[in-house]
Image: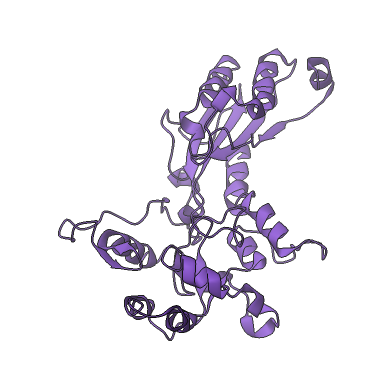
Length: 322
């Protein structure tokens, strides 16, 4: 669209989620030199030349965007257009949802109005206190600091976990302002196809040591990405369905066992993937949300992995229009 096309439109808000690949930690981090950033830079170039500035702007991107040249260009443009704005680094944990999904957000409001709170030049790690009443104020790093009397962090306790790793997870699970995962899970007794989500034997044997394993009583889970269910490491937590078996005892007794014996041990845990519906629950999608019947489970994981937490975005929109 050209400048004339934009000036013919009458709109109050721009919602932007520029391609994250130029900024993500696992990408090439091409920033403004990445061709996928061009559309975003084009919008920033048009903004000061519009006859009527949009009243609101809401932007989202991955952690890493906050240190990019693209972000610097965004801030420069907003100041040039005299927007009031605030940057955030927010995860669903800060509103009591047991899932880590840290994202950069920016909200902006055109003059002569102003945002309904005192803005700050630094990036806020959570919502303004006055607008977060009744909700926890737990950041994505809500684990607290490990004790100084822990063993050397290189010492493996079990499952490639160090003492610091285990204390961090225990601290997260003791944070009562964050809900338990069981509140977001499907009733396995009412689903006849739950076995399809059990981890295959070859995955258990090859990747069990690398998985982030949680159970229904946990108050934490790691970010679910579009590769969930296809790749294992760093794509999301897996669920221990059988809570009668101690995770630590299973992994501490694996050494020296044959593959067949290891598989028998690991199978006691009944490890499974979270279902797409459960991930949608953690991301705030309403109960009536569903995918078309012809969409495969793999495709559902990909779409959800590229999505946003609905409750976080709703809270930001409410904040900007207050």
